[in-house]
Image: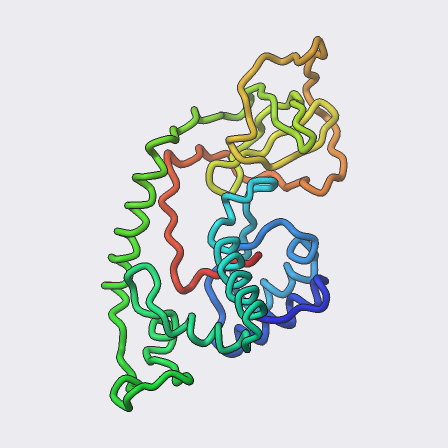
Length: 257
């Protein structure tokens, strides 16, 4: 955790540099599509520090669930510490010394040792203990598989979309606008679509509905001109989307909120 007084790209980059100097540079950083992460400064930072920067699907918070869950947990700790007039840093310390999801405690997973806190502990308990990463990975996969089983009881896979498919996509105000699928996006289950005015968006499959080339009597016109938009993206290679998302979050991948 880091205290931010500003959400500019420079402030976020400074905090990330501090964290990476302490824990090392990850292979990949996953973030939402905020201005600080979409800026050229952050792209240059990712290039100079040799890590891959991936963004989640716009207007689809579920795709950034790991970071949001972490933020929710941290907020609960801070709110409880404030209500009880306790030091919030001690609350964070004890959280890092508490087992999570039937695994080792976070400090043990990260530093192979238990942190010394205000709670009594014997010298033997504070001795370093190397954690088998293979065992942790297997247990994590079992936990994720269990969560996937419960989630899939009320969920189903939507049909794949292919370049040239006419669709309607949901906008922020709840209305539906006609567009054409141009390619599969880099993020899982997302597509790049182009409207009749030439605007290019990246949206999750849940925001798309297959339909005719007209909505409300307005015929869809094949786009020829591109215009600037906050969600405008470049055209990636035409590849088919995966059947399902089996991505696992490893220690070499950071999720940012």
